[in-house]
Length: 210
Image 1 (tube, rainbow, N blue to C red):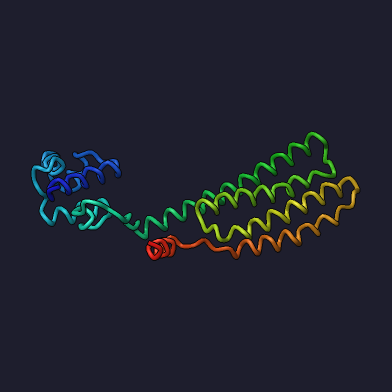
Image 2 (image 1 turned 135 degrees about the horizontal axis):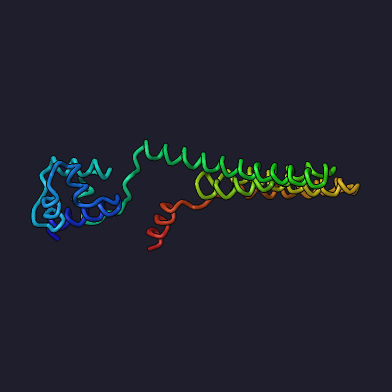
């Protein structure tokens, strides 16, 4: 494939990824949309200055525009990474607060209906393991899954506490339940020590066997 066609293919791909039209890209480059159209058809080549501007607009290197194949994904800009992390943290906090809001709403509703039952406060106790589950999901998807053992520990102990408090409300002694948490916690700690084999090491081992 000629260099013109390679650059044309990369510009088209990047423009589509960023959701720009030919006219919008042309406006940013201070060129006509006809010029952009020619570049994308491989009829002409943008000069090095224009290639540099295109790389900055699409946040890739000039080498990326010249390469036929891209084996590695371009690194995201630090500012975008920080913004994405901030948004994820905000979404997580909002989700946890939403659980607290629902618990408070149910507490107030039941209190208005029953006039203040003695077990009302248990609603907030049940909110703790629910928050742990929400935190576990977000941490697994967006943050560091290696820290999941801390959240799982909180989930286990909060569930045991909820069961204990629930039975205590009916004058049933269930303190023995907490003994279940001891072997459970040991298992969680041991599980946290398991490490995945890095892909690079797997490849090296496979190459050595071949």
